[in-house]
Image (tube, rainbow, N blue to C red):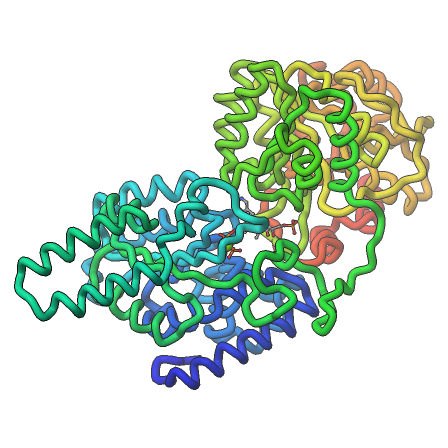
Length: 606
Ligand SMILES: Cc1ncc(C[n+]2csc(CCOP(=O)(O)OP(=O)(O)O)c2C)c(N)n1
Ligand SMILES: CC(=O)[C@@H](O)[C@H](O)COP(=O)(O)O
Ligand SMILES: [Mg+2]
């Protein structure tokens, strides 16, 4: 849809149509609702003033970019949003030339903009192209934003940064940066004063202009602009992020500046859907819901692994005041919100700052506390060096509680929690283990709370796969649990939620199979594995993790080390590809990982 020649009235109507379409589709499919509703006018104004066919449009996280998709030839497909084989819920260049870059993890946008600006300068295209970045107030709390601003303020590449400030991250934002951005004096008062003095001094000579400039500079001392201005980046704002006339005028000015400029736009998260407007955390990411009532359409099923984690940690924290913890801006997603409410002095939301979360927890461990760094598997990738350099090198007893381990579903490639075993297993002093159900989660966390080294415990998005297997026994270092023993040649080795998949696969087989819950992938239960090698010569590994460096790799390393050559190992972990978005079962089916499919593969290998 080309909106270049549309009038303000037509653009207002386009915003209305965009909001209706977002509400219609997200209420059906689920998705990121309040961020996308709130960013509508900003995105329409971006497309009115800039051109995504040549200007890099860079959305931070890009969960707020639905209006951009609707304005770039994807209105008809929008119905398939976040569905398997449908539109991605984030920007994805393979989906459209108008999507400049993949995004999903926050705070990458300004670095991308600086890189693009360098390329534009090197190619001599500064007269025709300019990077346009949209970043939210929550995403401004991650360190790499300041790495980028630091260089940008120095190099002064032309770039427009739209700071979409709705005073919300997923939850209420924490921290000094959020406070600075919404500091009282950055109100329309400052704008009115600035406009008034400009009009007034236009009637006088240079001297008056000089005095007014000094006055303005001193006034800026109490607005967020001062930080950016002092870094060498122009600051315009705060402006009304829903006023199209104002936005278009300001974007035009910013485009002509030929300098780096931050436009501080104040918006309402959820704008246009009363039930979601404002500070409502639960409307950030939603499942299908009823538009009229706002009620979720999803029936509440089995307890999620997150709920079990929360209950288990509440119990442990009650009896051990050394237990502390942190989340990086995912309080409700990780369940840590309940710990923060119950023990506000011991559990913290540190904002989108995974590196800081890991390292600050390491210091607490050094001081004798027992930190539970509670973080989605995918987001721990952002703090990997801090795990190695600040935690494992000093062998500090931090628990990395990795939620969303495995395929996460509609969030897709950028969010799959599949690499944690591979990237953590290689780190000295790190111990890795995984529960398979509610009871074993309690036991795993009890073990973790007493374990005096770094460790990582992983669990899936949603609920564990229930099995009719023997109850879990208390966790003991490097001890697995044999759940089904027989004289079969076949042994199914499950890890974490993979035990459930092993159990379900066995149900489809005529032949008997042994089932082992591995429980620890580092260190392995070598005694048990040696024993199993004497009884079973065909081993199949089930784990929701990447094959490369995963559980199967660990087992093969052991067999090679022990020169156990007669055992054949087949791992049903994920192949060496990024995993697409969509309903988890549909994605697993596309990978041949449904129990019925795995049973067929087992039979073919016998
Ligand atoms: C590195 C990283 N950590 C955490 C997240 C989870 N996350 C996605 S959006 C979001 C909040 C973003 O807030 P803001 O930038 O203000 O955008 P808004 O939704 O308010 O428009 C968070 C924490 C992420 N995507 N990436
Ligand atoms: C955009 C983002 O990164 C988060 O909103 C993420 O989508 C949350 O995932 P869950 O829905 O699994 O909590
Ligand atoms: Mg925000």
